[in-house]
Length: 468
Image 1 (tube, rainbow, N blue to C red):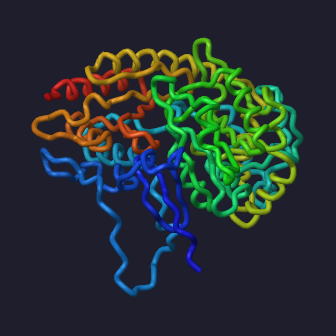
Image 2 (tube, rainbow, N blue to C red):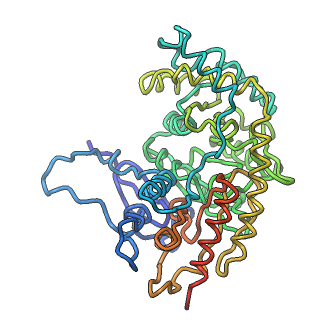
Image 3 (spheres, rainbow, N blue to C red):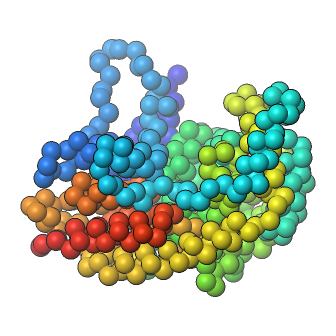
């Protein structure tokens, strides 16, 4: 039997597809957003577009022949490629072809994994026990160490049996949704959102309900907005602070208020804390179940070693939650992937039991680049960039440039404008359509200071040619 068809919102859309969906908060025809789903990512990002043209961002996947048996399931065929990884791959492909592209798409630190962590992994390769299967939920020593690290860094006390080690944060995100959601359950999804969230929700059978904030509120949603989006089908609130893609950080009192609101409404919270150590200035990261303990029994914390220790390629994350949820998710993982690579787990064990000196050094560099990129972006006519307080992303509004003429080409969306920037300025950025909010760019400042200045200068020179 085919899965139910539900509307899916990714960027600006109100289209239907089997196996996953979304609706705009409020749900009335006047507030639903319409247009082609993932239009920004269906074209070639103008890598092969003819000179002076823009890639076709409204292309739809080819239709199956009438009466033919579907080759790819509707559930999997409806998944879009990761927007950020796609932009990064295109930038690297152009560089390999000899073009001097500077990429602002990758969401990973531009620092090596600390030597002592690499050395621990190398030593682990020679230990025969690491050549064998180990418990699907993770090495017992690592589960215990993650629990201790969580108490040390967040003040959140959990047992080792409340920790599940996963293949990176993405697996933790998917398994959290898969464990909680039944078909048709709704997830309140503050937007701008990370590209993976709506895909994971759809795969789990849920319905994304975007709750949109903009630069006027530093991209932070309010309880009033969440209340308006709440329905009897709401089961989960996704919460991410510091935020990918905006770099916004919720103040402690607002985290507490949202957590208590969710507890009062009887809904779950999945809180993504992967950027917990990357905050700047007076911003402070707090863990929701610590400041709002009433939500702890219905809260899953997602985290990992990727951002704090520059270990994105090692693929070690975790989810923390109530024992029954972690047991159920462990059962899923036992059939999905079994244990995470033992050598990577040993590296993660060394990381979480060691010092935070590496992230301190990275944070200092990111803070410097953060100030630089905001100043450069804000100086571009038609661009407005709030100062991010966490992570390593800037999320400027480029709405003032959409529809302008660039040598006779008028981009009708931020996706088309991003294609022009790549073609003409040889700078790769991710358009806001990928994050549920057209009219914006996401730029990672996890690249060298020189490349950052050169890339933004190039982009500014091109955007400065805009004519009415």
